[in-house]
Image (tube, rainbow, N blue to C red; front, side, top):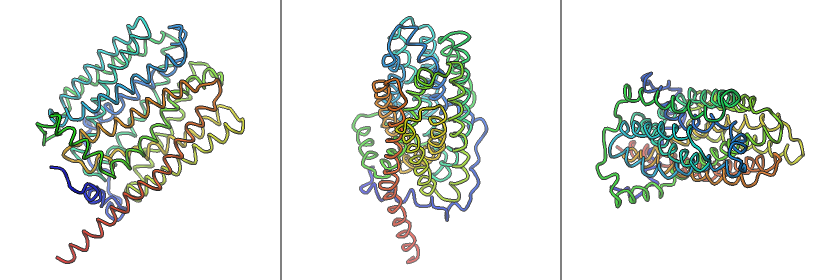
Length: 436
């Protein structure tokens, strides 16, 4: 049944995320095995992109092609990730999280093997597309599992805790990828992805319980599916948080897409050291997850998000300012990006949970639409970064500066409107309780 007033629903569900209601609540309990799987599921995406970032310039030599052509390995991944989510989400609502995660990992491991053996760039791009289908199953399931088990405030804390551990993946991944590239060549990165996929597959088979206790047998029927997506897409809270997350991730994906060419080819850093530069900025993400876990019980969902948006905007402006002033150094690129990464950890933890919160019965579909928007935007941004690369740091830094400014504007307008609706609903509920 659709809610005739989705905005009222959003207000009721977000009410209670203010500091007065959380009162420094402890992080909700979670079994170590489930936490490991959440970390692994969320980490599959950065594991599959960050691991081989240092190889992008090397791929231009290996296949005798251009940076824009090599960029298609990232663009295809994000495009596949985007489209597959619209299917994976409803499938997990109908059949459960466990089978979707298992089949996704089988697909991912097989595609990674194909990538390791790819004889041409076209085959590698296709393998990356199929890899993305598998990864999307795990990511969709991770977000839906959190919604299955926890309400919005508690879910944000669990997600932040999982992301704290997950942040080790993009720290270690680029370093290992660069070392493997120097020692064994670019194919070795995909061999490691095969091994990682097999390990997570075995752990999922052993440890993952089914968390979807209210499976919807009609979740994949075309008419209800379209109705669900229309209902989700008409919810103001969903778009407020989704646009916030999209812009935050867009700033990060800009750096992911362009950093290897800028750091290695423009700034002259040897490829075997690129992983350390990327790991340095990811440390900001790790710090951001700690800050999020500390801030949420004190400031609530909205107060935490606003501070993240302000930090993101300030950091992006500093980066763009240095570029326009002609100060093109590794420090002026990386140090502001650390601030963007701290902010990204804050914004992503809050936005993921806030966007899905109004849809406990259709968490899979909500997560799918959320991820679809993020991934389409990332694919477009990746294409732009490849096309705009001019041998300087300027296109990359100005793109990040513009995106972070957009995030601040969304926080000040759309997110603020959602907060006011939540406050009004909470006040109305309190008055109604008083009259009883």
